[in-house]
Each structure stands twice: as structure tokens, then as C-alpha cells.
Image: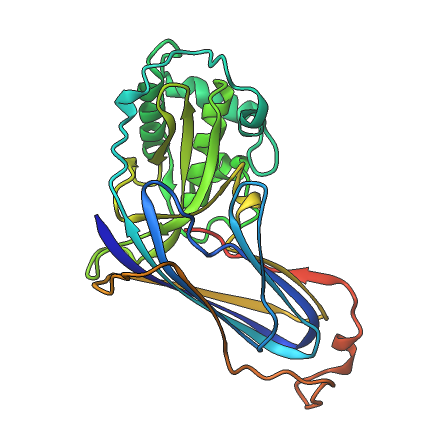
Length: 324
């Protein structure tokens, strides 16, 4: 068991003023049998009303709009999550293919679309893996995950949030988002329902890599249920992982998604910090909404750096955080 405090900060900086921005966030950890959310805090600047709903996958979504002119948006979240061992093992999935009950809601997790492309290159990669389709399901999942890590290099900044499985196959390198997508593609080629999971991975300070917004895969076994595996590290999940959202692929669960009106360049800075905590709550879940001191203006504050032509462009722009 581990008690983790997670801080996730986002800053959207614009090189001139924009207006009518709309932002959607998936940053609140889920409640699962393997983790307990004790508190969640969300603050946004410029101050504005924040709304919350549950999407079709059961993920928590916060959204807000800023109608006035602004040149940056800041988001700060803090979660306190108690994680528990799952008790699941890939060896528990003794099923064999085909999976007879991959119907109904599971169909969404067997079909291709979005960034997971059924291409000739993906099918050739599947053949290259040489994992027997008659092996127990858990063994297939484990072997395909190991193959992905062996076959591709982890290299930041060779892909972005729009990258597809074809991009990874062409580049031979990517980040966790890419590794998760290609493992999902390999599993779906076998008819194994699989879904993309967005969350956090706690890394002890002093390690070789920072804490991060992370992504991994869950595959469905009729006998064992959803089984999680991290192809970026080729390991089964432990108490260091915190689940935020799951969907068919990244497009269902980006940490942030938004649009704004104005001809402005945008820079997104994202940071994640995790630490083990002793601040255990003895009462029910706390949800709290706060405000950050970021100014807005009813009219554009004109300056030599604010060209008026940039304020008349009505094309919506967007930016999303890639998961590393």
C-alpha cells in the first residue's frame, strides 16, 4: 500500500491575447478497487466557473470557458491517492483465443480507429513478434508487451499528441503514448479487447527519470477481467501507478483538450510532481475548487507586442499535452 500526493500543473502561454477559450481536463484520479482517492483540489486562472461531468467511459471531466481576453491560462491540481496491490497476475488469464464474449461494450475495444491504425506495417510487426496465438492469454499479453519494448526505443520529442501507430513504426522510437497504442494494435489484431489507460507513475526522487503523466494498457480476459501492463517498462502495475482515465486510445482521454479564438501561438508547459505522503484522511473524500490570480480584460490591452490583426482571426486553435 502507498499513499501518494500528486501535483499536476499546466500553463498555456499565448504570444498575444486570445479570447473565448474553452478547456477540458481529465486529471481527477478514478475510484477503483486498487486505489482510493482521498482528496482532489483543482484551481484555474483566470478565475472562472468550473463544471464537472462523467464521460461515457466513467472518467471524471472538468471543463471551463474564459470569454474575455487573456494571454495565459494556469491550471493546478493536487490529488491524494492511496494505492493498493491489485493481486492480479497475467498468469491468471488462462483463456485461449478466440475470446467468445468480445461483444457489446467490449466491441469498442476491439476495433481500429483514431491513432491505432490497422496498416500493412502493423500486421508485419505482428508477424515479427512470433507470439503463438494458441498460448494462454496472459502469456500472449506479457510476450507482446516485452516485444514492444525490445523493438522500439524510448525517445522524447520524436512524436507528439497527434502521432499514430504508423508514426512509431516509421520512426522506430516514441514515448509511452506511442508504446501503448502499438501494443493495443497488436492485441486487437488477435481479437483481444484492449484499452488505453492514462494516469501517473510515481518515481522516487533521485531516480533516472521524473514523475510523469503516463500511459499503459489494459487487456480483457474473460476469466481474470481487465489486466494492466506497462509496455514502456515491460512490467505489471504496482502501487506506484495511479489511474486517471481509460478509453479506446489517447483521443478519448487526453489530460487536457481545448480551443481558443485568436491568431496566437501557444506554448504548453506541463509538470508533474509526486511524493509519498503521511497526510492520511480519516473522513470522506474532499473535492475542492480554487482560483489562481491570472488577469483577464474586457478589451485588448494594446501594446507594441499586440498586433491588431491577430485579434480578428476566427479560426479555432488547439493544444494538447502528450503523455510521456
